[in-house]
Length: 148
Image (tube, rainbow, N blue to C red; front, side, top):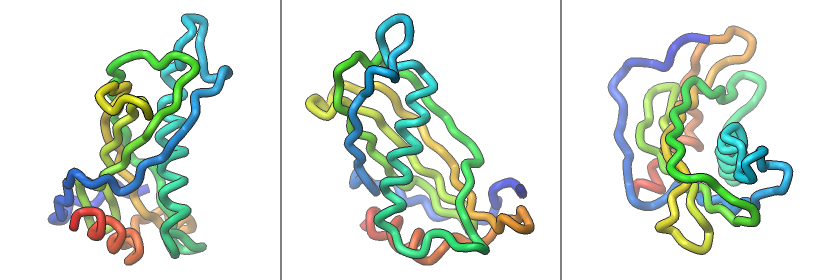
């Protein structure tokens, strides 16, 4: 895979989320200290991105699909069971072939209770060649809609 493009990017930071997923903490997500294991935070983020993409048409085909190129995650506080979470996604950057998605995991009943935040970089690539390709128009359109 080729690194994310370094061409001029469009910053799209906004207060309006691109998508908010609601997820329940499962008993199996807990570790020996009875809070959510740190690896499960990444699973929650993946699930939220997949739920978002289910609402976007034509975001992948045999010639283009997204891959996770980078992730950054700050653990702010432990998540106990039972809990219902909101995972907020915001587009903070659009490049030619990549987008940066900021994320926050918060308590569904108390938005001031921040469990985690950070961002990921998604790069669209051709799975046959392993080279980056232009962002699908549908992804670009949805990202611009959330910034408006």
